[in-house]
Image (cartoon, rainbow, N blue to C red; front, side):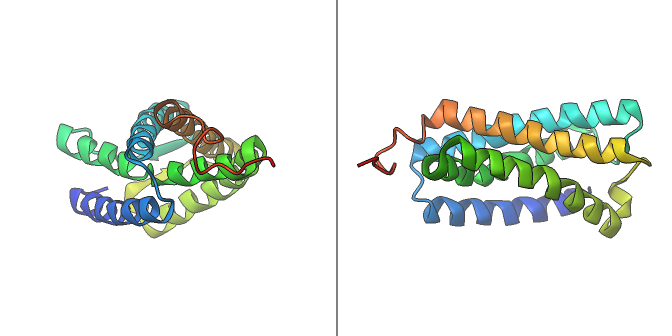
Length: 168
């Protein structure tokens, strides 16, 4: 990705983060948890990218200079708005809601990534076979689970919040 593309994604994700924070009535603690979850998810994604590169599952054209890497990490941090949604899902549906969401993400994630690579071939390419698809799916699960875990660690349990449904 070019720095210009990263700026565009960051602006879009910042806008989405604000909208989702307002719609979910997120507290400052939840916003901080979502951003922390996004950042840690980004670090996990970087690790997965390196593993995939070393196994030949894909090649990503990532500029490894400090400024573009910082922009990419900011992109992941701002994409933490997703964890505001998972926090709400956990509050409403518990672990079953998170399991269904993780399954959907594991299926839709590779489709999304393959579409991005088709639209922007300069970003990289996937190797042949099922291994890259399974690795992308596992990466989405890794990022989602670690990001949500950090969100919960910072923001607290969803069921214990004052907005949680009562079991009356």
